[in-house]
Length: 123
Image (cartoon, one colour):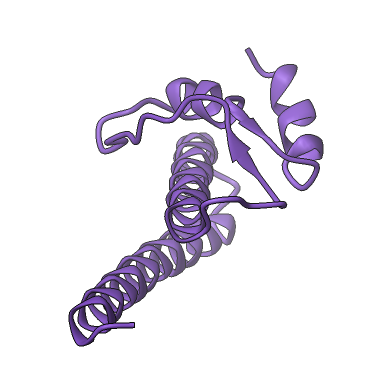
C-alpha cells in the first residue's frame, strides 16, 4: 500500500465517520422531539405532528442505511453480504420517502429481505 493510497483511505474513512455522526445527531434530535410530543398526546394536532416526525425519522434512517450500504459496496468489490442491482450511485437529498423505498428495493441481500418484504406492502 502506498502512502497516497493510505492517505486517500484515511480521508474516506474520516468522511464516512462525519456522515455517520451527522446522521446520528439528526436521528437523536428527531427522536427527542417525537418523545416530547408523545407527552402531549391529548391534542389532535400533536398526534399529526408526531406522525409527521416519525415519518421524517424513518426517512432519515433509510437514507442512512442506503449511505452505509453504498460505503460498504465502495470498499468491497465483491461483497458477500449485499449487491446492488444497478451500479449508479445516487444523491438522495431531495427524495421523497416513496423514492427512498423504491431505491432500497434495488438491493439484493438476505439481510435486507425482511425490510424489503415489509416495505412492499406500503405502496
